[in-house]
Image (cartoon, rainbow over all chains, first blue to last red; front, side, top):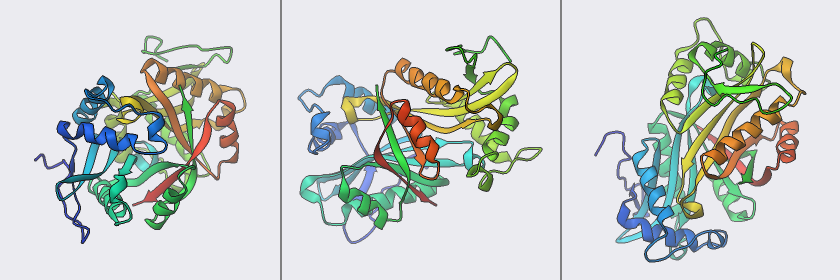
Length: 164
Length: 164
């Protein structure tokens, strides 16, 4: 594996491990995105999958600054997230890591897997020498705010969206 | 200023135009970032510039999914922002545009230049077929929240940061 690629790790007693998503995971990942109160309104799982998912997966896979990561427990995909590494002039030219698309499978929650997954992503950001990890979380996801605050994130900003 | 630079537009009566930042702009851009209540604490303008700025500029310039853009009025740089285009599985595999590092020079404010610059960036996101434009703004910047709301952005999310 390329030394800049995320290493597979087994971080703690949850037994969960993390690896880059593969094309064969894609259908299950879209299913996970659709199995969510907000995602149900905007995703469209099907067999075959709508082409947009395949194209996005390829665009992510080819970009050294984007990593789509899956959490695996035993033989099962139990989570996913995407990290984007971005160079900025600010902070004297430091990189930041942006986390998006965080999901834990509905049958795998309340086991500490989400915390392990975010912890893995934060370590990945340290490995890439980032000054900061940032994310936005929908105000409708009340539990998510407290979850991220427990992990040390501070809601110092407004997260603003403009749909086109 | 180089009138042959790509993506130059003159959107309205403000007379402002936009073009990709060039290496010769860098010292002035860092000076603009440092001339800010929050930026003053974390930037370090100097001659020569700290190497981190030059390295970040080159990383941005080489990445087709990152654009550092300057606003020009007459012969003067009056603003800057960075757009990052990110492919996601969500929204059926659509791209998003992330705006960061938005500044208008302190002697050029209250002239509509900020609205023109964000309007330009939103159009750029449409040109790249993005589903959404997103940004975070510090809760300490009270005017910025209202500014973005006037432009149609909705503060639907918490913007969370973890400094490493």
